[in-house]
Picture 1 (spheres, one colour):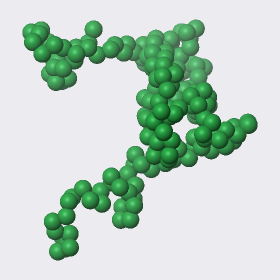
Picture 2: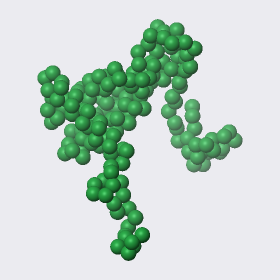
Picture 3: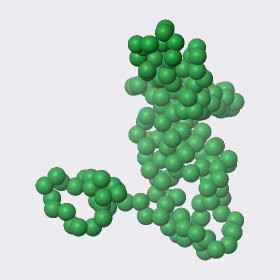
Picture 4: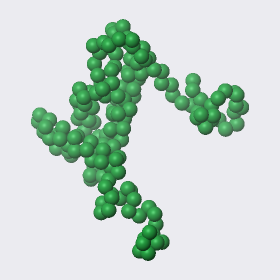
Length: 176
């Protein structure tokens, strides 16, 4: 440590503010790539969509467009493997973007939109319709793969412990 570095706040120059000395964090790089991909999609849309005219419908179209590049097998209701988490054989069901990937993508695009001059009030990535779509994708994929996602419920502070092993979750949630 040089004498000029002594006494400086260790947070200064960290990945919080990418710039001069350090490359951007993995998150910042991914956010920039996602933002550029979305803008490229808008530019190549027929007709092209200027960013100020972008709305949640365009975001939904983009998410559906991305499905063609997905790697998650989502069984259709008529498939013999529908609802099975580990099917024993291959099938012809489509590959889709995984719900978790879409959720993370929307989070990065939501942040990028505002960082690039968009207002919180007009953010098309923050619309209720996007949240509904993500919830539906999550539920659909969970059913198709036989995974039961249940909503976590908070325990009351004065409720007695059941003695079951909730210690892995800090005792804050119970599954119903």
